[in-house]
Image (cartoon, rainbow, N blue to C red; front, side, top):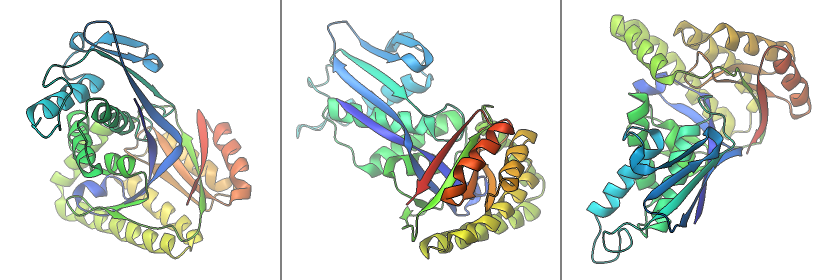
Length: 319
């Protein structure tokens, strides 16, 4: 039994989305997490993740281990709500022995939704293998609960984009809005190679907000306006308008203190190489930045980012 889930990138609205403002995010299908589950003669549930050199029986891992937490929570859910209609774990509550193999091409802690993608792919694989069907809405809610375990007060945007694998206009605690892209556009993603401390940056922004709510509500309003304008431009196919909106959004993220010298250097290098606009993406203080480019200029911008210190780049078309 196999399942997979894509990466994601936030285009606009990070951090402000935690405070009820809209954000835009899109899937990145060039990278993905894949989970394969197969029966085993060995006792127990074994987890194999060669990317991080983990090979362990489930119960030998701490209960708050990111992967163990997904499996434990899923097993609790499926066994608690098993019903005579057949929805529930195989074997009428007796769990089979099986192996879980997890691989991913999504860089960890880079703002590309690695954790959410592994969770969603793992839940889908478990759901199929243990005969416990789940809708996308249920998978999304489950993945959000896992995100809260590891990120404190996440926006919920990572799990939403990864679950639905479509462009999303996201407002916390409001119905999910999928939106259409009027014309394809090209993004270059530059990775600083520095793990993005999402939990810490979210907590620091909250401290700023608590110290001066009126001021920061005004900043978040500006970010929300940018996100709304960006959605309108994307839907109308006027993607060149996104460049200046990206630059404005990055300036506001700098004001929130979630950028870093490394991110600022890459953002500036992209602009000098001809990017239409650029900004950090995600929690900040590491992880990724993005640059909106003409398709024919993507290679030049990518090279400029590497020269400026990017550990890797990824060119993706949003369509």
